[in-house]
Amino acid sequence: MTSSAQGPAAAPYYQRHVFFCLNQRPNGEACCADHPAKEGFDRCKARVKEAGLAGAGKVRVNKAGCLDRCAGGPVAVVYPEAVWYTFVDMDDIDEIVESHLKNGKVVERLVLPADVGR
Image (cartoon, rainbow, N blue to C red; front, side):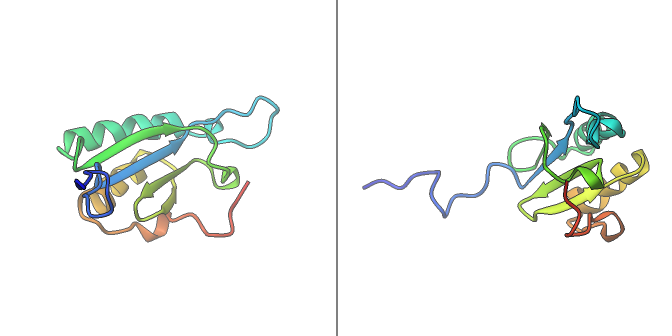
């Protein structure tokens, strides 16, 4: 029997994976697209690339549909740590990239409270 690169001992393809909710609700309910979610995604992707953090074994920044935490929008989540962030402006995004994605330190002031949902 041969071992698989997908097995439990295999290193993850990405060290960290960031998902930005970009969902737009057509019915007028609160949603991340009503905030600077797309701008935050674009800024994070650019900053990760500029910092040399993008690619296999490093960081991947992805668009996501609804993450069901609309009341805290805009939101992004970083895996494998499962840290949920909310952000106000692009300085917040820069801080997440520098502190968490580059140096592994969670930006506590931007962590979305656990009880915030839809």
